[in-house]
Length: 131
Image (cartoon, rainbow, N blue to C red; front, side, top):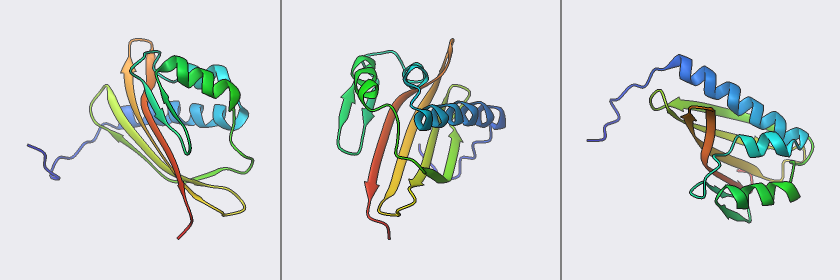
């Protein structure tokens, strides 16, 4: 039974996923394709929904990322939340914007801890007009 009474409090997981997310975000700003590729689950079941694109599987995500290595200059995050589900799963949500203020970006990532570290197993990015 799902209830909103459940309290999830795993500060060590939140800290680990926050560090992985910050590493991902820095690689996104820097256009570091190797790190961006590393942080996605290397599996055909991994999925990424972009603003105007979709990739199914790690190979498709890596191929897309190679041609779209970074984001526009001035990207700023706000409202970032990391929710630890248990010791092996977490969800990150954040809002983002750019200096021109033309869009409000929304991003979510589902992270899973594998033996080799935290990896994104599903991601979604969208943009809407502000307000």
